[in-house]
Length: 356
Ligand code: IPM
Ligand code: MG
Image (cartoon, rainbow, N blue to C red; front, top):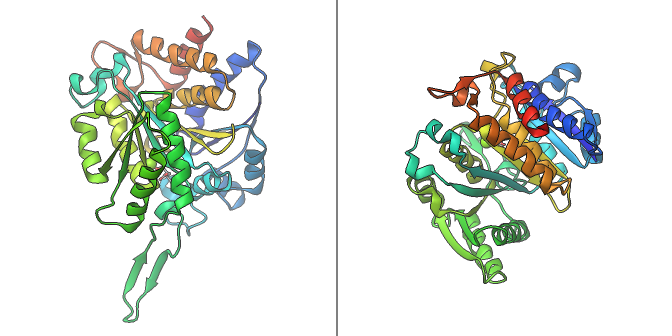
């Protein structure tokens, strides 16, 4: 298996390094894996004037899996669109047609105290946010900032979904629910937006092929409220690109910290891009304080999906759970009575338990 390691900017390199350590440990044990690194994001822009160099795109295309870190930084926010670090990630998702983004939200017993919500609301939580990732207002035209007839500036973006785009993410949602608790909640804004009216219609239609899966619908505003009121009612939440971006950040707080959340972006085959949900966090970069568990848990998702090695995925997830149960915490999840350690040390703790 060929893995492209694109660690990017900010805390990306230091957290990705811990994910790589896990893969290296498994390689020493016999897992056949080749890793190659390339620049992406702000560091690629600095080195060669573009956040997604041809060589990086080529490496990603040739890889079986991509381990991605984070990208961005204050200094790049005023660059023209197309040259900003975030654009590289969006292009990569679209070029590789990674339309299905899985963001599992699973409460970890040892971290219940780190959530801002009450114990009874989050204890035992296990939900999957499935976000459509290659369409919607993120990619559709027309877009831009223009002048209208009177010379006033107008910002324009377009929410757009084709029926086939909705259909394919719907099938992924129902198939995913079959491997879980057989429930899909589709989140839209069908009361106001035609795009979302089509979304609801197609979801309902595809749902007829899965009579064993219960389908419900929620408007996105109600879904945002329900997520913090009674999140355990959900099994699989399927939603559009923009709504999924927002709801997954909200849901991250249910399990204590966004620093814990991995994600998998996949297309039709085994290839996938695996990345923490958190961003580049330039304010804490290079200080050995960032939480590397989202990157390590992204490696577990990679082992499960691209390597088809659920046994190894479970081992990595167990090693993380035991590290936490043993009381080790990075700054974002530290609570009284636990021991605060740095990024590197956290990676070492997980690897030690993985190999024990
Ligand atoms: C995410 C991020 C990205 C997104 C940004 C960095 C472009 O917020 O993966 O959730 O909006 O998709
Ligand atoms: Mg986001």
